[in-house]
Amino acid sequence: MSTYKGRLQMSGVVDQPLGIYVDLDQESLAMRTWDGEEIGAWPLHDVQITGRDDGFTVKIQGIPAWVRTDDDGGFATEIGLKWAPPRLRRLMATHAR
Image 1 (cartoon, rainbow, N blue to C red):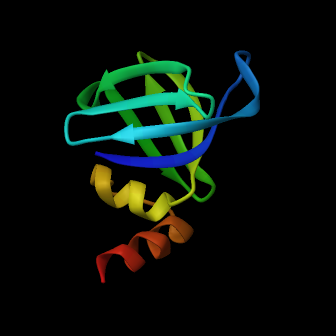
Image 2: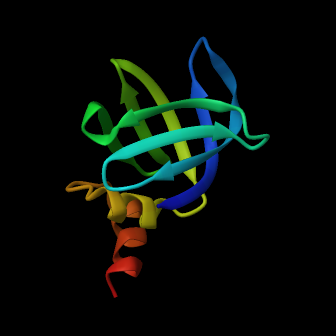
C-alpha cells in the first residue's frame, strides 16, 4: 500500500482544502484526515480520477472533489492514469525512469 499526503476540497462540503492522507493499493482508495479521522474507503474501480495540471478531479459516487498530493506524478503512475495534461505528464515521466 502507498500513502500520499495531500489536500482535499469539495465545493459546498469542504470549501477550504482539508489535509488528508490517501491510502492506495491495487484494489482500493481510502482517505483520512491528517488527524487520522477516516473520510472513507472505496473500491478503486468505483472511483473516477482525472488528471489536472494542479492535481486531480476525483469522483466518488458521482460527487466531484479536487485532490492534490505531495507526489502527483507517483500517484498518477500508480493508478495507471492513461491521459494527463502537460505538467502532470512531466511529473509522471520522472517515475518512469
